[in-house]
Image (tube, rainbow, N blue to C red; front, side, top):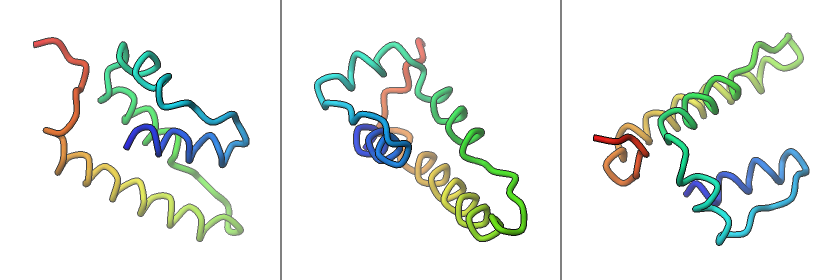
Length: 82
């Protein structure tokens, strides 16, 4: 899921796509919880009236994404030492 999402964002930002083999080295050392919080904070927009529809949909998607992560949290390696 992270691989698909990462490349979706890169494509939207017109950045090079990541190879699947490069995914683990890029994310293994990171705390997934912090990655998700960082994404959610940056994905939130404070748009003007022209961007009102986009802001609404971004906030809806962000809430659904966080809800999905919470529901499926046991499927991920969070990178937190116990």
